[in-house]
Image (cartoon, rainbow, N blue to C red; front, top):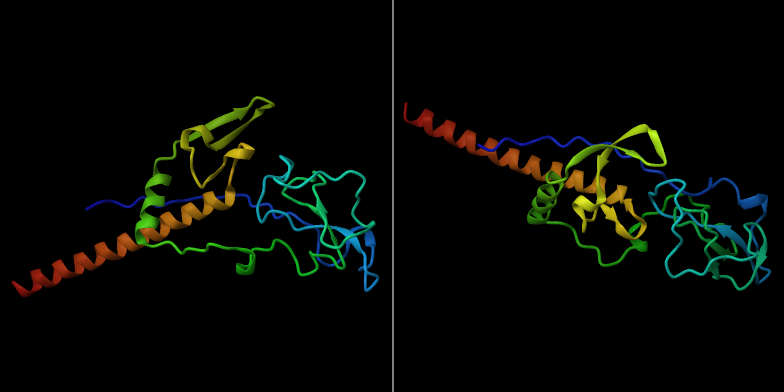
Length: 202
């Protein structure tokens, strides 16, 4: 009987974006004037704070600042604030309903994973070699984790940014837990069946 290894994980998920209770710089919504106001967007649902690799496909901002009037509505640029936070020209604050935004309406090509997919993710995660290490820029502090180069390509890695994709990594751990729970349930059912056979032969 194969023993199941429990998966324990902890990930710091940093939600980026300002409070929904106020607009940037205290500026009111643009109203019906035809133009808009520059607002920061929610950015990535999770990110590594303090890291800015730019937003792919989005031109950098030049003189644009949050709270300034803008035109046309719908324009956007990259203010290099990190966490995929952009500036967007809008009639009202896109963060007014809260951050982060991870609704189905914002996604496409959604495919729910089956048992085989969950098992594959569990096996991949079990191959991750856990290491202790120090960053060259901060040698005084010891860290715990895995090395990106050891696991690439993986949904747990954002290779373009040289970062761990914490959302992908933690979801892989959940997939492993679900796979192991399914396996444990099957083993329990098998034990109950064997127990019944033994009882019937008495």
